[in-house]
Image (cartoon, rainbow, N blue to C red; front, side, top):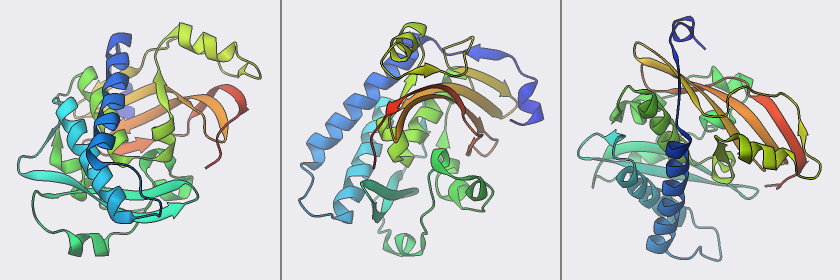
Length: 245
């Protein structure tokens, strides 16, 4: 978290908005599946590029506050599979323009929520190729929805299996389950946003079932260039063994 971001006022995102965003994402994925059709029996990178590009179209229709520059669209390159995880990288290009030459020069790197400590400081072109083409209201809700949309566009396996927790009752039900342990109690359960000039910092509880069921407090800075920067998550609750990809 930058020093300037720490000086702002904490604003909380209503539980109703979190629930609405979760429901919209679910409908987006369902519509995308209906558009693109069943997964082919053999891995096909072109199928998955088409799937994620259609998903991005449906996503931006469902989140109109997050606007993509007119005449542009979100495109993808699929780099293959790592276990059951798909390695994809999004970028923005003029709608209807062939992107073969751009795809060929792109290199894969982990999505922002999945990068290790060494990768976080590595240079990349994500601002020029992705973030700079979007606009959103500089309100607390605007920052939250922009983060939500960017998470879906990056399409990490962690995000695909996760959901945002914004309710004491939901967290309580999780922790009450077998083999769950509350590690780090929190005072607030709704996502929090601190705004300062053209930056925003989010603190969000995320439930993820990969490797081990966990609820973590994710801290994300959205800088003046609209790039996402993740700090090390704080483990709030730990559960049984989860899904292995």
